[in-house]
Image (tube, rainbow, N blue to C red):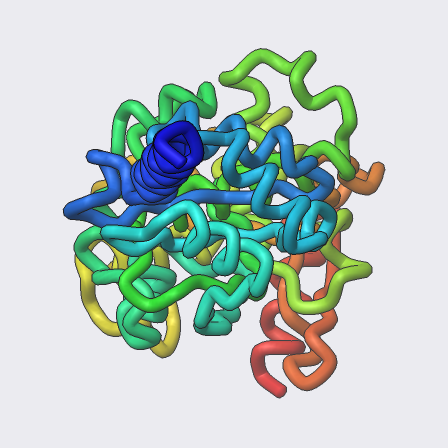
Length: 336
């Protein structure tokens, strides 16, 4: 009887110890005890990869426990991709349930082509995803800009316009990072060897795309508009883009959008004034989409130096190579 009792006590002791160990391994790590964290699961990641990254980032105590629990629940292949906010005090089991359920309580937000950092920031704030101030600050974060190898003071031009899904109260830096990563994914589809271009040359193409984005009305004309601007660059003629003046007025001077561009506007003393100076402005004036990016990298071949809107309803332009022809077209079409 004494031996049986000793054996039962030993089993009880081992069970208690195992239970305590499991309780400890399942408990929130020191990192997660007091604050939430953002964790992103990439499409195609295996459970082992996910568990290892969670442990490496101190978001759970044991990758093995997560894998064993998933095997027990038969959810090894059920983990969802996406960006998750891991709440404070979350246990390993909680993390499992969160990543398997895939419930991110996300807000849908559409950011159109041609918007600037300030416009994007305002929309995200309206959706309560982040504050405008945080987004603008993150878009100008030096370490993030350097990480992407962008030779600029901000990420203007590299925040890809798209429909996104973010939770409310999401960190602005993560939003910016995802938008820039999305930009480079699309850029790679357009120009697979874009990495071969020097940073400065690539940046110039993005500046050009940002201007094209604000000038074209119909996609088929974007390459022609690009050809006009590249031809003017080759002749060292000012681009004379009204979009750059609108950028100065609305983004730099923070005035209401002008109904039309005046001769006084054309004299504004700014490096972005392409009526006053030849060459490209110092930075992008918008965040371009696929059409403008393609046009910037693959402009049409033409001898055009001018264009004027001839059909506001259809968005078509009249293109010309001679100033006299352009002036005649301006008189004719703008009088209509």
